[in-house]
Image (cartoon, rainbow, N blue to C red):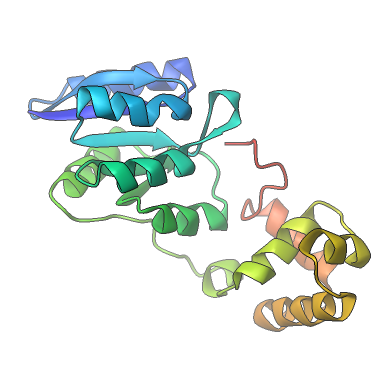
Length: 206
């Protein structure tokens, strides 16, 4: 019997996830929390085989940061990150944090259970990149920082100040982004990125 920890701040979803897992013969929920800041302590105490963690939980705590902490201290615990927002950076951040798999909350229970079982058996599952230009593009960390600031409505001088870069360097980075995406200006690109859910200007959103 595999032991599952659920880290999710939406009560209805948390209950649904719990019922789904507990309805299986090969796994059961041994603990739940609405706060990612509690995830590591619960893993220490309960020793789950897998933790299902939301990207952002109660108090704006980062599930990805919690995943990184768990992986450093308890490498045997499998991590599945979940979110409702299809932002392009979440998947990459989850990978960098050491998460084994990634799943969207709008997935049906069959897919969720498949991800959990596959992860427990040692196979990581991440959403496949689609045909969208943003999925095809490979942005550097500096370019992603620029994109986020542009989507927040920052001017070139404000971006330079925020990133401790010269305005000429900001211009170079913007040019690189436009070359990769085919947009004629960064404003049009930012509108597209936000409209398609690949960038979430407010990081507190799920």
